[in-house]
Length: 267
Length: 275
Image 1: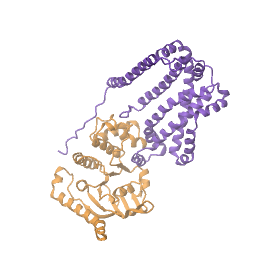
Image 2: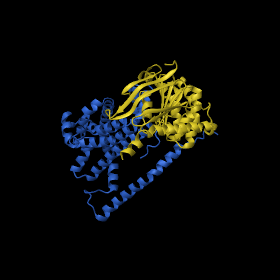
Image 3: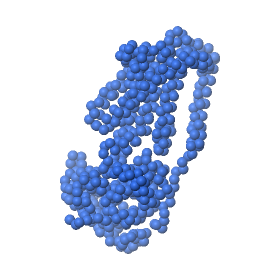
Image 4: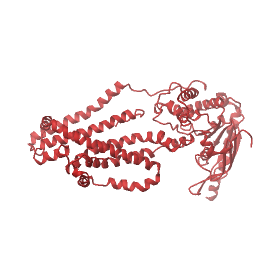
């Protein structure tokens, strides 16, 4: 176990519905500090479940999840996670500033400290000037940026993102991708990112974990060796296309191995 | 291109003056219906020669209301106090109940059937009994109890719904911030419940006045509104009885409006609470 390992998943399985559905089977995964790891796979491959297991939002049926050298539960209580869901999940009764400040309030920060931090975070996501707006006054993309600012406000060591840009249009998504990378470079946090977009996974990640469904397993891990920092030019790099192809093939091998073939034979 | 600042657009917010103007305009259709209704009422009595004891003219109710205003006002105020007491008591107990039920599922399964049973009490049948509980029904206490029983259920059901219909993701986020149950209630469940609580309170506001007046039909202080209406009707002073009914409506509406104003002040954050 290397010194700067942030997440260690060992022999983890997860079964739902009293064991009838196996969402994940024998998962082993290690993530080190500063990595940007994407989990990609077709629906039903358990990628979101794996993310939730890491964040202690659900418990494994078998195996262990270790985060920063302690149990996932302990890590959650120590506020090691910043979580961003597909929906921004902002609290409607709070202004933008107060949404970002919520985790800080719970962590017992003083008023002045909070205000300072909120200003800093909103500058980071380029939303300064929107402090006193309510969430419903913002566009979907802006809401998601508030959600990211909130997740990062208390400097968690690991950022868990569950298809954060899945509900946004392609233009907004690409812009937020670049913004996320800028934030990641600035904060140096470790990111676990669930997506079903191959292009997004390759563009953002240092490593792409390709998963296959029923039961969910890790089919392949593709290291992404594209140069940092990544820009619009990255998307036109031949190496980028090679890697997109590699991930796509890994995805197809991963899912073909099971279902469609087996079903065809049955018929 | 990627590094350009992201363009942002904001939904414009209306000024206070404009929103008041818009609110007044919203009332025009309702006011027109009221005027039209009164005119039809007045004219129908004249055209069809409806007897005065069956249905008095709006104008005679209005003049009776004016002539008798001192008596009516005292009676109305007395009954309104009972209604307000019952509203406050019933709503407060309902909200506390809802908080306990939302926090401890066990209590929900144990107590909810009885809350539903309490709601099934035919309150008119119950009124003579509560009157006996409290010094023969002369004091305000028995009417307060009736109003409180009526208010309890709508507030309970709405509050409970508000406390429990929280986006599960919102709760998970709170857990990821290591928030305890008290903090989750204070910062998520209770704010989430407020619009629901006000819906319940608005229903209860009207019910409380009904409860107090109905309670008084089965005996109450001589200066209570329900007693006054009953007394006037028994002595064939139907116009005066109508004036009393009209006043009971006014007080019910006043309490409702009070709750609605409180709602608007409390839920300033909400995108739109207009109905």
